[in-house]
Image (cartoon, rainbow, N blue to C red; front, side):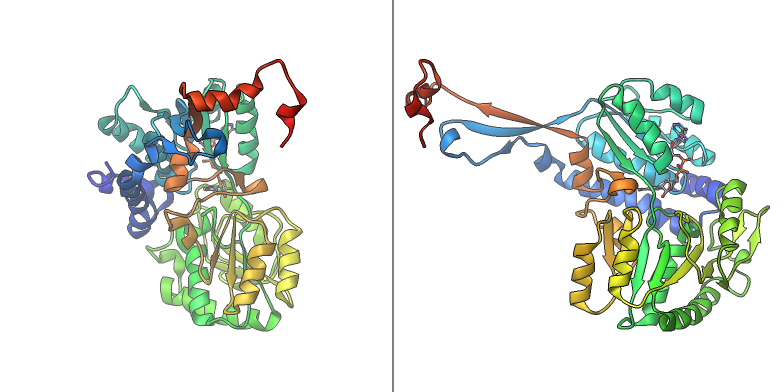
Length: 414
Ligand code: NAD
């Protein structure tokens, strides 16, 4: 489906977000194809009942873990990567043997319609079903009893989904939002670091759940950062980034308004242009801090004097979805990694941890619960059913008969 309909997906993503083809292919379609290839090449092994090494207690038995599907699962996607987020969890759910109801985001309608039109042509209609709709339809859908719910979106709606799931004690994975701080110290190659940070910030016009959200660095480094960033933005997008074909658009006017408010809270060091009608905000660097998740092309810088101050600053706020540490000081990196609870982390780059199949992707605290990608997707949609197969071995029965009455103190001695 992804290969035969690349043009249709790219066109829908361009309609919804003006997503450039390169981003559509690399960050949505290829990611999905690679995940499927990875799962297909390993799922036969994952599915097999797992033999557990026997202990003294089970030496005559067969302890096994069966990997059962949950049953019918609901996958709800978000608008910012509308193909990837609606369908990436689905490959794991299918591999684990579940039936799936897919609910793409209504905020990216062209992509939702494309998924709804194409999926039934490729998958068994009895087992996999796409339901489109907005809040009323989703509210109705959530009244149904599912065996598992996998939700991607805002923390506020995540709580609504979990409340609905609770009514039936349905287990959930919640892939939510949250701030993703970047710490930079003076040991880095700033030319490379700035490019890697700005790439993470500018793709999808910053509307990426793990986009760098704010920078923590010293005042001296901030001045150099701004200088390099101004040059890099111009190198990538020209003197008027609004005319660049390589920048997405903000999803709705409501989000343009929300983001414009942030601009008033700081000093614009780079960018700052807003065009509400064109759903455009320029890649912008501010020299002040924000309090909420930004989810747009605005990057504030907060000055800290040390890594310890950065750690305290981050840990005084809700758990980040992602943490980015730019430093060549290995001890410091290890210290930060062990002291900051967060969903995931890339050191000396941004976003890349989310592209490694073997690394489970998910949040912690306010940024979510549960994880997926690669094997973690299979595990998410799998119930581990523990089974102990016993037999009528005479020695085992001799050893085990002490459990039967009449009870005696000698049976409890070790
Ligand atoms: P959205 O508006 O597309 O909503 C996500 C899903 O929730 C959709 O399927 C939508 O129909 C449903 N929904 C919306 N309101 C609802 C309601 N009141 N009741 C029931 N269902 C409802 O996306 P969004 O919430 O604007 O997503 C943006 C947020 O998602 C950001 O915070 C971002 O960080 C986060 N996000 C997280 C990840 C991740 O992997 N952790 C990925 C992408 C986005």
